Image 1 (cartoon, rainbow, N blue to C red):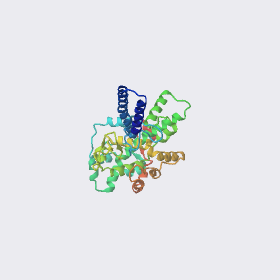
Image 2: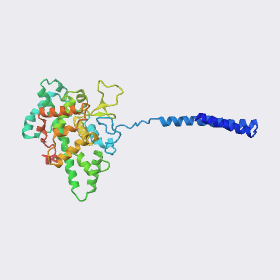
Image 3: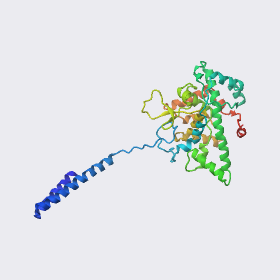
Image 4: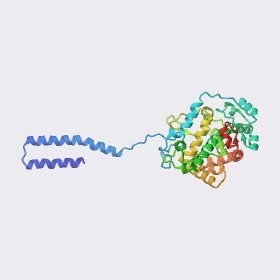
Length: 358
């Protein structure tokens, strides 16, 4: 471009000679040409640089507890997600429980004995005492007997998982009542709008809401909690109530010890165990990675079959970096510890509202 520009200048000077213009006009015109050239050259250079720039998207991952950082503010189903809408009830649960007391293992065991809460009785009667602990005991890692440590961990997390499933059951029951009505009240529509936000469905598609607003099999949730925490002994579980190893880029969390300082993710931290369970269920029920799991769960519902953890586990290959190996480990945990015994267990009601679920 520069070569052509100078060539044109020489032709212009030749034209001036042919017209016998004086030296003063020639100097004046040449000065104008040089000024234009030196003024326009930086513009051409800047324009060239702009064309070669790579613009980086600095938007944070919308789903704070997503398991990978590939999200770009979408759930992969052409629907933008709003983190505050998805997590508002989880944040509020966290905020309510700030002055928690960590009971030691012997105190918890005594509490279980006093309430006659044993896994043997749960397997026989399918009823679980509503003993909701807020923190894991530090001494759980000191229980040398593997079988006793596993049973103790299951006793702690089982009521928490059932409680969250109960919350979903109540919501699902209300949802189908609304669906089966010919018209809805303003209060019902307001509730629906809130649930669309909670489950990340800005298009307000009822069919999508039906698939997302559903339970996670108890045995599958226990298996994942056991795998992610080493049956309650991991640092993330002890220090951050992180039962499911969920990652965050924007929320409060714990850095892995072997992670680089500049590495983006942390393991999400919670004030109470219940918030961790709720966040896990919201993740499975909203993130695009688990869309196939939700589809398979919906098919089981349509066929009138129970939610089978061994079937649904097949769709969790992206939950961990080990992929299909992770799925096989989950299945092994479920089978070896007879966790499916708890899938049809019921949580004894802690309020009148939950009595209808027994």
